[in-house]
Length: 165
Image 1: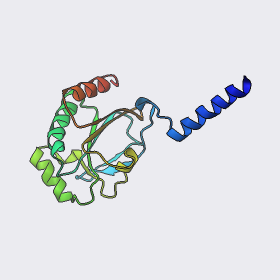
Image 2: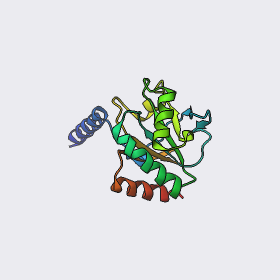
Image 3: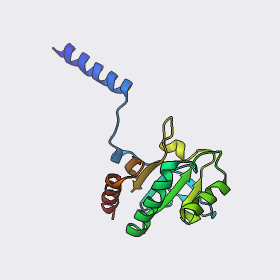
């Protein structure tokens, strides 16, 4: 009986190791990074004690054109103490491309960041990038992750950000 139990535990642990144990999103620690926006201001997660929201985008992303103004409006109006970062990790997008994109969407440049080496985005993605992706962080923990935006996602973002206040 003991051998069967021991073998069962061994197989279970081996299977967990092979498949990988997925911790709940809320339990995952957010990676540290720093990045400068288009105005040259630095954002450093090691110094930032509050909540922040990141939206990964690129300038030719059609869904991003819808998502960015909606997310900007939601966060800046309802959660003014939450830092909002629109990060472009696509090397081909120049700083001027991002400036033009921000102007087209009527969003101030201070919210836009260029991650030309992908050093920040690689910390949040394994393998393929998905655009747009919205990530929320509070108390150094991931609190939400969404691809795109709709009413249900906005409600979830509101709920999770309200719980941080």
